Length: 323
Ligand SMILES: Nc1ncnc2c1ncn2[C@@H]1O[C@H](COP(=O)(O)OP(=O)(O)OP(=O)(O)O)[C@@H](O)[C@H]1O
Image 1 (cartoon, rainbow, N blue to C red):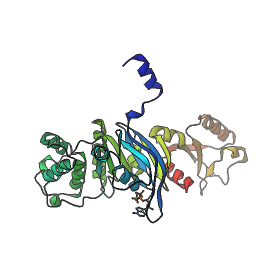
Image 2: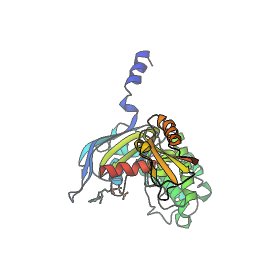
Image 3: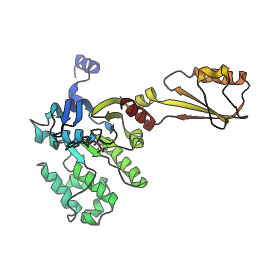
Image 4: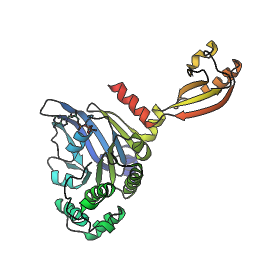
């Protein structure tokens, strides 16, 4: 690549590096209910994006439109450069969708159902690819089993195998771990992370904020049909996170001394703890002066604990603010 070109692309990331581009997307259902309001969203190739939102926020509607299941009212969506309406087949073939429930195919074998899925997208049979997918998902030994005989966890794996059968660029997972036990959830997390390593872009919706906290590169929050925020996960936690310092007192207090009023300390009901809350983005000079002022006030403590706010707390405060 000529030097000037790489210089330019360094300054202005080229839009073609985005594998999914959503612009001005709105959806009003026939009932008159507006489920999506002017959504803009750019997803980079290879990232793991978590879309968080409370029930009814519009997540399923958004994914439904991108996958061609729901018609948009206005706006555009392109998948790897293909418009989802004028170039539907090409756009759809780039997408693998893992729905929440496996509703059909109960009496088919794993192999038959996965082969059939590939065929749906007009792809030539490729047994070597399907074998790889089934092996990666620990389903190879089960290839001749009928789906009805599989455990819930194995059925979930089949859903993913089906979605990967036609070698999609983007994999959508709608609540991939809803209703699964802790062990399977961990397994699914491992699986999803390893998928990303193969270069597939992964977009997942989740109620389990912990899931996003563990895996996502970026987090989008949707509420009442609007994208409230899109941010690098690390940046989000740095910007909006709070830290708390909890001091276990040697002698309980009746009230916080006047001299410490500026720290807005919280005294526990039994007077044995003081809690100091501070923004992680700010400098931490506050702590040094707090500890100094506590000593000045004659307050002794026996222990100190710190805790950081979780993505869940950040999410709840965002959604609450926007309500
Ligand atoms: N066919 C429809 N007709 C009218 N309203 C609909 C239709 N489908 C969905 N809605 C409404 O649109 C809103 C968004 O629904 P959507 O299923 O997209 O939300 P969601 O974020 O996926 O929620 P959940 O997490 O509960 O699945 C909801 O208020 C829902 O009742």
